[in-house]
Image (cartoon, rainbow, N blue to C red):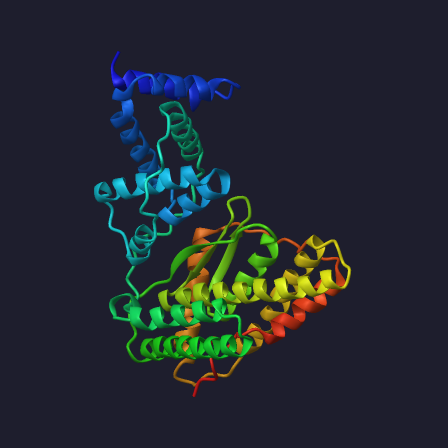
Length: 371
């Protein structure tokens, strides 16, 4: 029997049958024949390529595998993506390449052949069932920001925020965050001024940002507020655990940086407030955390909206207005039908008060007053 036939039989048993013993049957067929390994890997690359055609990107696939399966499956799919990348014949932008660079470098441990085959089939079963997503890599004119050597500025911002999030000294964290926000604001203003002086054919892009449980609804609200304050639009996909953010390249980078920083600040403040609640004799913490993050997202959104209303100079108004129209049009093309949802599970007064207080203390100065 050929290796291809063996793999076909294993797939029919494990991938297309939902019976209780289907997975074990398929894994037994693969484990009994070492000659199938090359064909099995080739089929895995085909599943990955199919995911790309269905609108998925490397970070999206890794995120869903991490969410639904285990670390061994994450390492398996990362290895598949790395192996398939040289054979990917479609043009990819810098964001895609950065996702490839961020993949883990270690292959999954094989262990015994049966366990390895089970893990591979579990992964392939998930990849086979991935739904189609909105394509983000449509052909469009590049943003001039993608062609200029800006990585050093963004690298400095990320480094400052990482230090702010890691330090145990509040004063140092505030100073580092303030410096990072200053650089971010300068970078964002420079992009707007350049667009005003040198109009280009650049069009909005889009990226997906993970919105992970627990308390993902409050996190999605926070990301939406950050996106709106940075001239972007965010659409949350609750079942798949991410939001799609639409905007121009430099604004998308600002959203990713600010959202990540605010989320880390919120988690740190919530942990500290929760410890104080427990010290006072409180035992239940889930409702406290949910209410804390909901209040944090609401209050930060209010603060960011106030910043976004800052008056700008007359020479910037036309470019900002045209960019806003372009972002809205791109969002409507990607998501012709969207719905709104109410924030659920907010019932803890102490959590709400602590979350609002933490939001007031958070660093949110993504953009200063423009001249």
